[in-house]
Image (cartoon, rainbow, N blue to C red):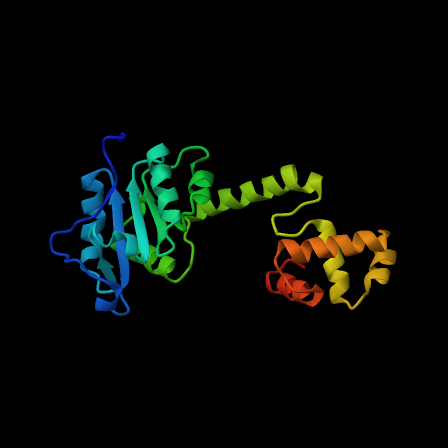
Length: 230
């Protein structure tokens, strides 16, 4: 794979240019691969499925789901995934031969919604991947999910806990104060409960409301509860 071998969408001869409105209920799919053999393999698996509408290169940008089929993740692959991430019409999935050290974190940072190993990419699993992405779900092999959870836990312990932060949008102090607001305490009562000054309490709550673009304390409590932050 090199810069002279660009990624292009699949162009199956028997699939004409189409739009979503032409195939109501079918999931539109674009397939990207530098290697034509890899591309054809995935296209052949999905071509006959009535749930799927394979798009050609002219309509690829409008696909609901995009499958990137590669041997491994390199800079070219990451660049393609970043480009797809900024296309709000599509969700990207990766069908990959091998994931080297750090590659899982990299592709997640690139916005990949699902990962499937090429050795597991039979017709049923490919279809499951496409339909899951179209439904807003994520898909990872069990061992990769375990690695991801271990990585997230390590990040929380090593980088965030020492700074009083969490992976949520609230610091520990902010979450504690919002819990007290949710219990009906006013500024003075929260100050006494937390041993902070009333001014600090007001500043912390104002920072939450401003940063999350909320209207007031009640809105902040509702937001935190809906998103599992408190």
